[in-house]
Structure formats: structure tokens, C-alpha cells
Length: 192
Image (cartoon, rainbow, N blue to C red):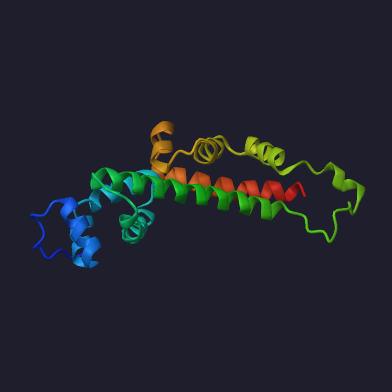
């Protein structure tokens, strides 16, 4: 069942006609017709970048909501091309947020809370900086985990790209990344 039911009365209209009608009337059926034409494209792009069906489905809905806001801000000549770029940028932002969240989790797990900036104990001088500690811990991972972590976080590859590159199943990629993250956290905690 489609996410946005289409009544069918607008199927003869061009994309540009539908955009103009939507901007004038704010009729959601018009936007549903327009977006419905390209929903499979949007889902496919999201799936390619996010490499997870549920995340891709969520993104399809979020992108529809984003279109409602963005459509009036742009002079759109080719809706399909504009939508493709909007979708790609949305997915890249999601991946960037995910990467930032991962880095924040690592920093949080490695942070030392002090009331002032003075050293509490001379042994604190021996604590390496987070980036070097992270690189050292990555080197200690099992080869599969290390490869997946490096490709995902440092080369910005999605699950299916990593799976193709390493010639393994996508599920294994996700598992190696999750286990790798857990092992990195344990390794960083030991260095405190």
C-alpha cells in the first residue's frame, strides 16, 4: 500500500504543473501525486546510502516532510533531478550525524571528569590523546572489524558498498561494525 494515496485525477499533469498547483493550494493530494511518482527512486537512493531498509523507509517520510518546506524556496525546473539531489544530501547528512554520534560516544566513554584543568595525579600525563588512542585501539581489532570500521567511518562507505568490497554479507558488515565499536569502547576504557 502506498504511503501517500493517489486519487488519480492529476495523473495527466506535469511535475511543474503539480508544483504550481501545490504552492497555490497547499493541497496534500497534489503533493502526494507528485511525490508518489518518484517514491521508489527516493527509497532506492536512501537504501543505497543508509544501507538499512527501516532507516530508508523513515527517510522517505522525512524527505516528503522536507519537500513541503523546501519546494517554495526553490525555482524547480526538473523536479526529479532536484528530488534526487535533495534525497542524496539528506542521506549524507544522516550518515554524517551518525558518524558524529559515534565519535561523541567514543569521546564520552574516554573522557575524564575534573573540576579544574590541573592534573590530579602525575600518572595522568601518560594518557594519550583520544585520536591516537582510537587509532591504537583500531589496530588491535580483529581484521574484519578493523576493515569494516575503517571503510564505514573513515572512507564513508555504506554497508552494501563494504559488503561488495570485502565480498561478505551485508549482515556481517553490520555485525562487525557493532562488535568493533563495542571492542573500541572497551579498549579506550582500559586506557583511562
